[in-house]
Image (cartoon, rainbow, N blue to C red; front, side, top):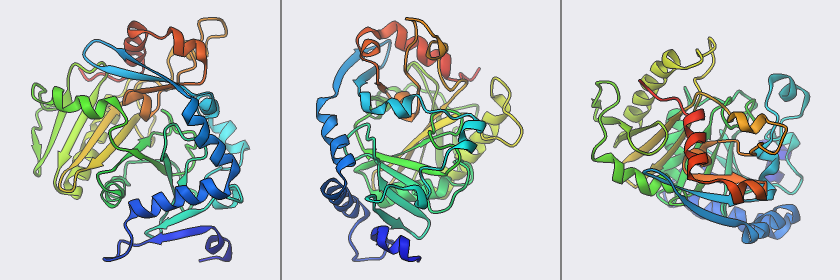
Length: 329
């Protein structure tokens, strides 16, 4: 470990028996960061002033959140040219001086998200600079979910559908139960047919959820490797079915969220056809500053513009989901 990394490390987690849990370490990290990092403390305090509004849609609900502090994330420039021209803000050398981390299994850095969407919002960044990709990293994604425990849900944004750092592999974590879809999925589960014809894959169920306003694939199982295999199988099919066609060698557009209840992993996959709705790119009063990432797809729609918070209704939200979600035929 370099001297710079030692100075930045708040704690390490290797999964050893008898050591503090990862959830305990994350709680300590967030408390320490609020105490010593004024910018982060102000961002956390600003969450007390956000406005929220629940909207009942056809078969599902969303929570609108007016949070001006998330404007940088919502409007992030993510073209290859713009990415090349800016320093990577997830690389250790470019982190704020006050920012500390938990060195997680010698491979990832767990960080307080400096612009939290909700309280206890974490970023989990790979220790080295490598492209954002969930394909090939699903087992680690699920392992992180188990290490954090039932209190957290782990999130992933694809490089072309919500990741503000598509050049650096990272996940996020938020407290479980914060996103409407987490509470709605069980209600839809009973009447949902399996995806394609594969009802079970090595003890893992793969279901296509119906009636929730956007395409959602639910993968569940008690074995992380089997869940990862089922996901990889689905991702290969998604690459072939993507509209427009998936560029060769690029990950198909999707967002994912995973939780672990102590026995079973639950993985939600949101296949995508567009990064942002057409209204995002308008230059008149019809512009809507909503850039759907995993939290938006899971039912927490964050907008930095108060007029969007006030005017978005069920019809507009249903249309937004239809526009960005890839529906399997």
